[in-house]
Length: 129
Image (tube, rainbow, N blue to C red; front, side, top):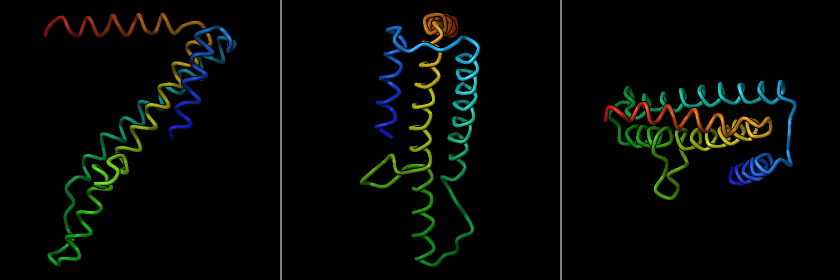
């Protein structure tokens, strides 16, 4: 995963520098597909919360241990690696998909417009706080 993230960070920087460009229609289609992918992954990540408390495993000690293991695998990971869970892996995929989306936006020259729009939305949402 780290290699993929590094690859897309590098490609994004190339796009920002103007070294990587795409035809606008193609770049916009790729950016939109990445945006939908981020949305879908985020939805799946939210659904992992439903797996945090499993039931129906019975009262045997081995069943309780298995239940705890599967709950951790879904949400929190292990003591050695907290990203070793479905939620953690989905978060990594979301980060890469966001990098891809931003790379395609930069490759068609719209990254600044997207950043400006996001900043405006954040400011508007923060006014009531």
